[in-house]
Length: 191
Image 1 (cartoon, rainbow, N blue to C red):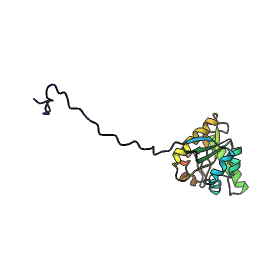
Image 2 (image 1 turned 90 degrees about the vertical axis):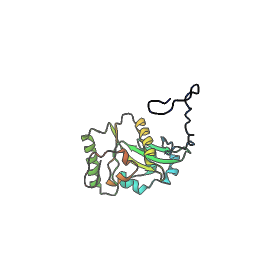
Image 3 (image 1 turned 60 degrees about the vertical axis):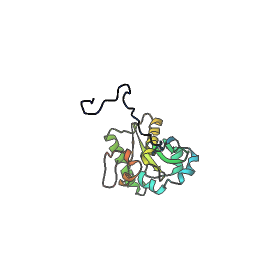
Image 4 (image 1 turned 45 degrees about the vertical axis):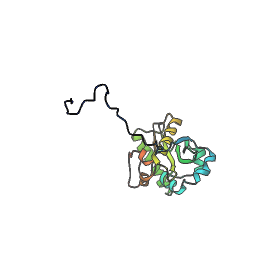
């Protein structure tokens, strides 16, 4: 006897042949590490000094001082991997950081532009905060490190609806970039 598709029926009393799944390959470790965010404390400064480039931070986010960012920012967060190693840093302030390396008049002009543009897009100072520093240790996936730090910052500042960055275009190549949406820009500056 055969079925409608021509395949033979199993012999009477024997039932269908068992189907055996191939053995599973051994479970491999996850490709993305488990990252936990925690408030930055002064003792984190030693680990942060190893990968936070002060000159790059100043160019991207404005006048930057790591100690000040840890102790005086509205929120400063570090990211730690499974071993407890510090692999990321994020600092959020109430006001936009003063641009670095420009004249005082140009700095005031840029700050005013940033605040005006933020308000135009609905992010007034009472619902927005500003990134004043962000870094990820080389060799760690930026997205996996930055995302938990942003979640921790928003959790610490529940009234904040958005974190903003007023920076030069080079920021688009930095770890924070994939978490940002460009709202406005001038020839050398973007929000």
